[in-house]
Length: 238
Image (cartoon, rainbow, N blue to C red; front, side, top):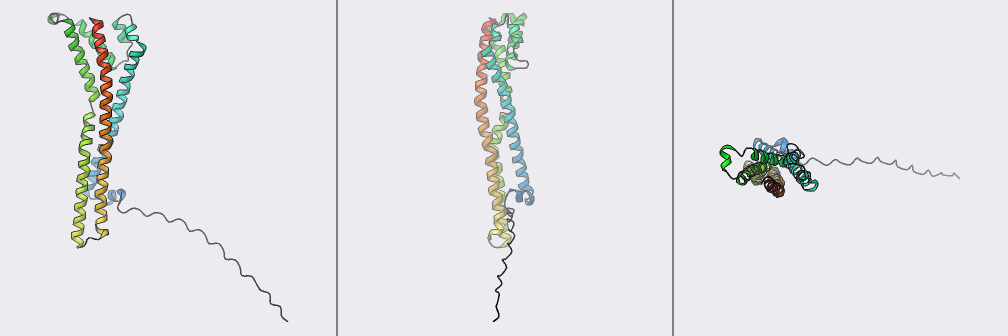
């Protein structure tokens, strides 16, 4: 009798794991619009980019200016070095150089010295009040400088984005007319471009509007400290 030895089948070799398929690039996204968009769409994107950069630069600059002024106001109110000084001249020297409060103090001191000649006929209190008001207006002008740009961006950037939206829809209708049929592949690109333009216009406008309102509120607080300091300085000089 012949003994038959059954041979076990060899185990199949493990197959190598297939690499994960990379996600295809979105043919209707922002990157595709930048690469394949026409001159008008790229121009709208450039304008929105300039508006956005200007908005954030203005916000950062004005915030630093306000922090400096509010810090000076806090130092004047807390330390009281100015009012505890032997004279107003010494008190002015204790204030931060090139600061708003030192500018107010030096303006008032200079006005008290120049109360002579023709100005001698003007009441000293009225003359000091006029000088302090002019100095306060100058500080207010410096604080508000640049806020008009934020207001302009906040009010116009949605319309710039809307223009890009209308242009994208026009391109979609043109593609439909050329193709003779409203297929998805013909209109998806222009319609996607139109929606992106709308979103970008709002994304630029919202920070500008919120930043403008926030900075205006902080300016009001800072100018209140400046006005209070000027009133006390006028009383001290009189």
